[in-house]
Image (cartoon, rainbow, N blue to C red; front, top):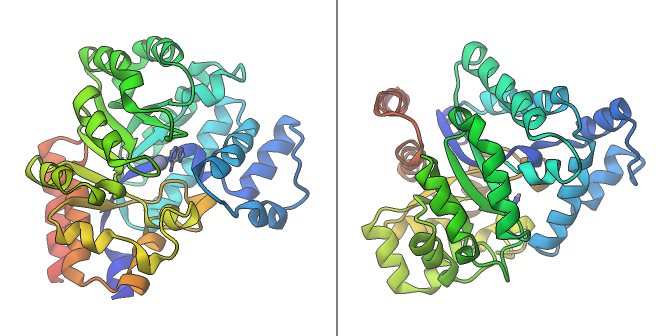
Length: 333
Ligand code: ADE
Ligand code: ZN
């Protein structure tokens, strides 16, 4: 089964590009850009990746991003992820980026998006992958700051498929960003939001009702509200679940406690993703393998998870059909 999981063609829908910054690249970029780090070695950095909750992770994640200054840095970061994802047989990936993490440090929006975009173009031509980019607003910052970020993004509309919402969830309900999301949708962006990771099921309802999102990132706390579960099932709302992240950030104590199998039993459109793989101990295949060793789902369920991701992606019907055909062929080979 492990070999089946490794070889399975995959689609990734929940991946923060800043969360793919491996400690080795962190040091390389720090040196290249003359940025002082408070860590002395890769081992010391890895040892610091012991999180009590989402906030304790975010503090170190924003600190790590301080080495990203030039277009080339964003290119190198993105390219390293794409090569790694290709090795996991990722065929299509939808990547989040957090522009405010960079623009608030004085890095121009253009520098960030140009570096990422050039790497995505290179992956399309030389790795045979398709890609999409999703701009996330930081929810611990104001709605006005999010609106200003959206304005920055408008000249680059053709490079960004959707807007999303991430960072500290508790105390920052989706409704805070209703106007920004309405404007983004009017401009033609699709919409997703993190909800129900640490926050209550009510935040998932709010994301659907006040932001009109098409997917929920995480969403694992939906099971606490049976009416919401019924709604997510009947509206076929995809959930981009990140198993290793959930254990690292103590949403679940152990992988054996994870509710991914339950979500599938409930008929929900769950998918498996890596969130911030450099910080949480693994890329998408590692997530599938960790789920397999703790929950022992069957081959049919792994294929369902992969199929759900194809259906939930923001690619056109022809590309979806090609990915479905490849997965089908893999299953029967
Ligand atoms: N930013 C990066 N990873 C995140 C997560 N898992 N939840 C919220 N914000 C994030
Ligand atoms: Zn996330």
